[in-house]
Image 1: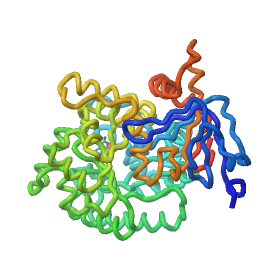
Image 2: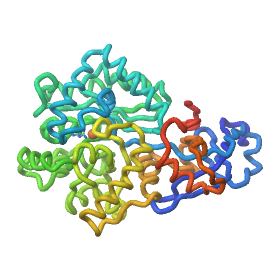
Image 3: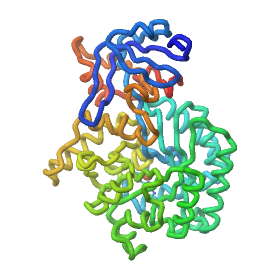
Image 4: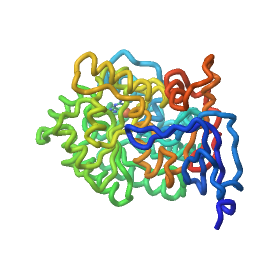
Length: 429
Ligand code: GUN
Ligand code: FE
């Protein structure tokens, strides 16, 4: 079968993508080829075999892989940009739990999740791992809306059986059986790009019995797991009190069996993970979702992500809306670099600041790896792309390199400069 008999196209423009954490591949003028939703690679001259595929001329626009948001709370989208005056634990009680409880009302969920799915579709994110609430109906509806959006997502019905207000907490058994029912219902929907992810909120709100039950579901339904870890100092102290037999916060997940090599796992934050905890994360192949805007807004701290990258740990970037005030991954990349510079300058001279290459990598290939081969134009990767009209950000310079354009877009750009978006070879805007 020749290329022309298959479903594909060629994008022509400037191209930038990550080879690895230290290396960007940059072309001022090149052809990116998609066949059956998979990248064939990027070429300075179009190879003969692809010449009969439809050619999309971007007029010199910048083409990059889309971003993976490794941690975002859909039901918190409606209060983004509010409630930035307190730290994590009072923030949950004051703003977050009351808002999430509203999703028992399906008509509110419908309105709110429609806005969320539409905004995510129009932004720079192509893949995301999403927290919902503990309401099965609303969570299924969110999954339908995300499926329709064309984005590739993991969505989790949230579990909590302790230390949560009466109006929002569940009994342990109800939380486990409700989760199984949700997994069955989600399976019946036959989604092609929306998958469930088991979601114990965090150790303070999940008993070991609950987490052990969820671990069994993760195994039975071959679902990954997502949660929070070592975000805030008061939270960590609380975990030590709640789980006295654990050696560190991560050990509470290990002891429940839910953090183990056999279950793909995302842990958001890891701001305060010490060497011992880092070893546990590395041994269990955990993906760290670094959320610089949230860590700043909730006064959580500045995570030593450069050190995680240098140790070869899996790190992606995330917005953590509404701890993060915006779902813009463009912002997250910029903030990751800025926060790492403050950490280095103010109190940790040993941990160097992130480079642009590293931050771009975390937002693309780093986090994308949780979804398989995603976040790059290397041959064999899912063809996810953003077409950016970055040159409409005014400049007199006509000699900007592709790399300079990408860096400038991250610092100066926003969603308004996205003129095309492709996910797994399908144009969604
Ligand atoms: N820890 C437990 N729940 C949450 C949440 O909703 N947001 C953040 N940032 N941290 C959490
Ligand atoms: Fe979070």
